[in-house]
Image (cartoon, rainbow, N blue to C red):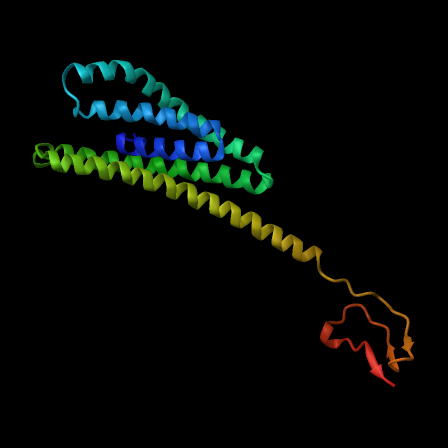
Length: 213
């Protein structure tokens, strides 16, 4: 599960891009991640006493709900970007594959990080060292962020490349110049040149369209 570091990063990122792109779904994601940030930090034990208890009671339910809706909001953001785009096929493909690979990268990374955390928590030297615990908390959060962004970029770039190459190959096949089957011989008196018929199937190097008289 993402921790306070990764949630804070995604809250800030989606807030910035939500305003920049006027994307209501990203604004919603920013709000959800902000709530999850507070909830995650409260659960680390950094906050003590009644303050931590109050925050947990207020944000725990909201954060639990946020975990359930964050991916639907991400999908909604992708659909919103596609609808607004002038090139819906390219954007839709990029968003669909990007979000899919992002999810896969996140799940794989989360499983690996949880296994590593279990190993560290069984080591008394780690559990008794606040610096190491804080360092791992930061590394864990930023590793999840890196996996999420990398997954999205890999998928979206792959989709865009595929669409671009498909269009290029299709355009190339349609734009091939067709050589006419026959052209009547025509004499141009001013230049004293004759244009002879062109046979179908000849390459440009094989065509001699002009001959001096």
